[in-house]
Length: 354
Image 1 (tube, rainbow, N blue to C red):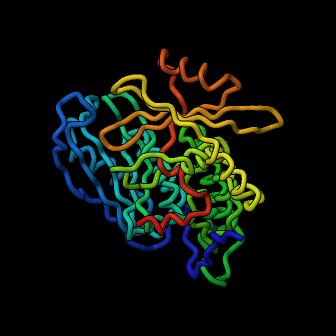
Image 2: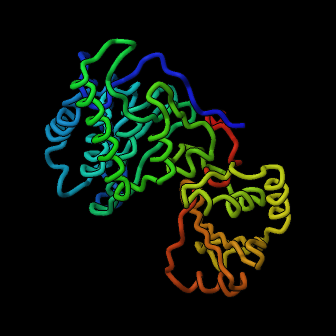
């Protein structure tokens, strides 16, 4: 049994503003990263958002970026990220921030001792960085120990206060509109349907907090992990091949008989075959026969050495491993990208990795 829900003592507003201070948005740091101009990014600029998200925060963010980085666009020579630490606030403003983060190329990060809940979690999903001046790439990163949680928008009504029917109708319409905006935008933000379903069905009085590797992997949220000196072994390859495409579909790898699945993973690990690189600087490979769906399939894992660790791609194929690997060596075929997170046990608590 895996528990994610936390009962809240405070209901935060979906769309109607309640009296409170807006979030504080500041420049966290700006430094040169030492790379040559034109290669990745010349400068790292970090912003910080702290406190309750309120109407107007999106405008404040845009104004701060415009005044801090007047030459940022259209050259995009800086890597821009924003660290988020907020218990929530206006759901609709969270959607606005989410859209701005992608439009402006701002990656999102939750530090190890920070929390990003409710409306903040919605904003977090917009994290995007610009590579090589024009390529927009998803960038939503959580450090182990951070808290990330979601729930449906509330009506902005606190406690047992009696509310006039007309105001309640306005609140209800506002909540539905905010949720609708998120759903409408989700295809452009690579937000899995299963995450939208979880948000919609989690009561505003509760919080669905991401805890396990399974949560982060299936909802395409990266976790900051140490890669130096790490190289995939047999058990990593087995978990990667048995879980990755389940997660890619947005489904949970925990929704099955785990005892049987773990036994099958061990069988896969024992059958993994490693293939060395054809020459220096070329990728290494690993493959294993998955024996899925009543016919033989092979999982091919391509591993490129990089200065930060290993770049991993994989495919499932009916071809023989020799044929598949030869084809990959002689082509520029782009494989689905995996990370070290995808090689970890699905039921491992991410906070244990800090």
